[in-house]
Length: 122
Image (cartoon, rainbow, N blue to C red; front, side, top):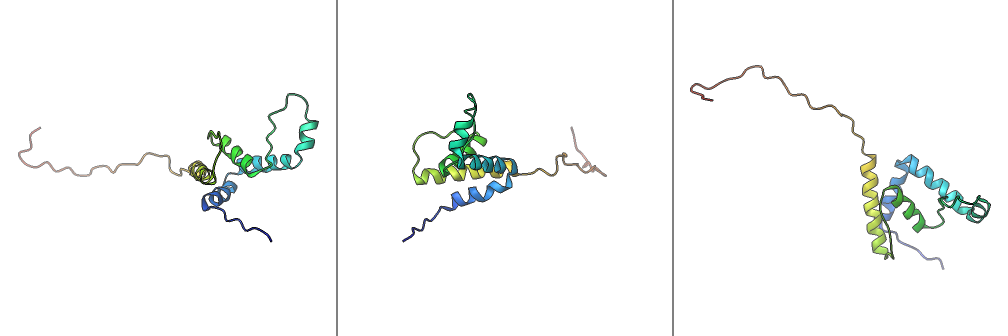
């Protein structure tokens, strides 16, 4: 019998956000393609090229995203820890895709008429 695995919404949200970042998404797809042929990639690579990104598992994919977002990951993680990490990375990705449409400072309306009350002293 097959097992049904329920994923936490924080993991799903992170995965759904990735296509909104084309450069990261394409690099991850290439790393997955390289990961699928990891054996031939590693053994046919000239010496000194040990920085080839490979994604062969979900955890390596999270590490890839974390590296892109300058998030340090280290140690053993429980399922809840991974969900929290996914939530934090999702929020960082949302911040990165925010577009500022108006960069001009707000213009203040010129005063047309100033009324100075009688007896005003400065």
